[in-house]
Image 1: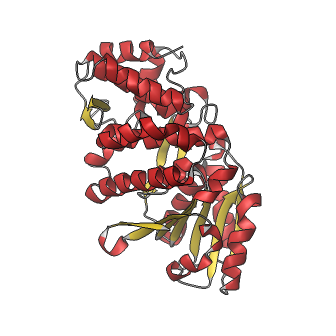
Image 2 (image 1 turned 45 degrees about the vertical axis):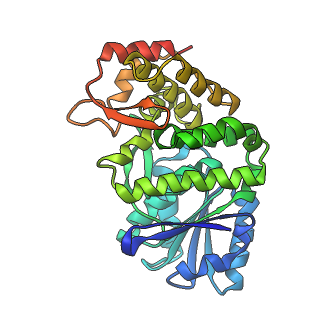
Amino acid sequence: MHTLNVDLGTRSYPIHIGTGLIDQAELIDPYLRTRKAAVVSNEVVGPLYLERLCAGLSRLGVETIPIILPDGEAHKEWQALNMIFDALLCGRCERSTTLIALGGGVVGDMGGFAAACYQRGMPFIQVPTTLLAQVDSSVGGKTAINHPQGKNMIGAFYQPRLVLADTATLDTLPEREFSAGLAEVIKYSLIRDAGFFDWLEENIDALRVLDAGALTWAIERSCRNKAEVVVADETEQGERVLLNLGHTFGHAIETGLGYGQWLHGEAVAAGTMMAAELSRSLGWIGDRDVTRIERLFERAGLPTYGPALGALRYLELMTHDKKTEAGKLRFVLLRSIGQAVVRSDVEMSDVCAAIEARCR
């Protein structure tokens, strides 16, 4: 097992990464305030791992309340969120009861948001079961639900007390979902870790066949990059914005098509290519860099072109993005592979040209 620490003072927490951790309830036990926990999962993950997690906690004398949500991004909304609140209330959960999110990014986001809201805050633990959740959404305390006009527009910053990433859960992850997680892994290398990008070019094939050594190393390096940024800028006032490379364009794809049509990582990959095109038009990166980025996404099984919604529709959707400031869109762009910057002074004609260049 590898362990990293997210150093946030009194709210610091560990990230444990390893195989078979779901069966090691003793790793969770020190972070429970009482002998009661609500476990939020969904219709897909629950049948695979819920009984094992709850059985381990039961052996330690912990009462568990299972809460099963419908699966998919389309259900990341108020109605499903209320299912969590209903179950917490029916189970007579108190402020000291711990909520454990067992699942991918949707379950983690919704579980975290529910924990932030219920009785004004209850302890929260992340047990991510997808690659995307293990390297990104489970770390850093962003929790949210979607709105028809924009993704993740309603939420809270709320840090977990523990992240338990069991890499064995990736064995049951569909290939498309695994590739979607690789988009976030590649993102870290592009924004702040050029050496990691070089490593990914050499090892992407090993990752796709779930080579244990390569997988653990990539997850740990991704989490380390995320943790360093979160510690420097927890509530996204500065450096943390860089973690949104490709997301402004990508969220427009997800919202414009309807949540769940494209996976989040797929939309981020296409959005990152739009950001790369825009960076090239500004003279920051060259043709070779764009080709390297495109090739890596392709080898990861990800799209490098977005849907042809039309540039004006993209812009309309992007105006609802959380990174808009004082009415201006802020774009995360690339000075080079391994160095990202935030700019709000980009000509909209250049943005439209970058979108059109990467739509089919």
